[in-house]
Length: 142
Image (cartoon, rainbow, N blue to C red):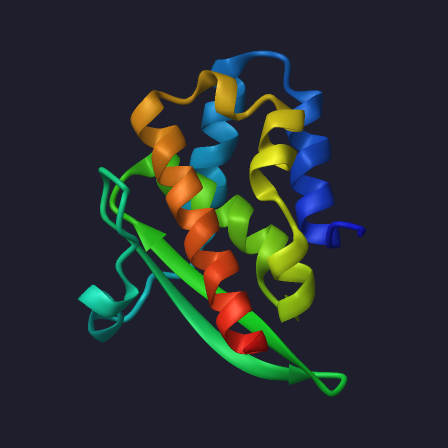
């Protein structure tokens, strides 16, 4: 399954950057470019459990060529995590639920070498975000 163009562009940019400080800065820039959630969207139902930082993900179901699809919006109170949210949204948002459920972002992050420089807590939070997104997709398929 092919990754969407926004994710491919991020992956290409990350691969171009050799220095981890530059990669972190790039992630922070990606996160800062995300639109903020409305105050009413920062509610317990949208909060991602398992993250040390505050992370909220909003899933919006939509029809995509006769199949269920999902778009996501998200936010974190931590700069690096906000950048990780941006990368996940580029990978998962606006796709068919089946593709979302079948896409292993953790493997893709490992291929990019992103997780090796995350703290254990951030890595666990990333897994929690991916699980939340994929569970939303599975629920849309049910």
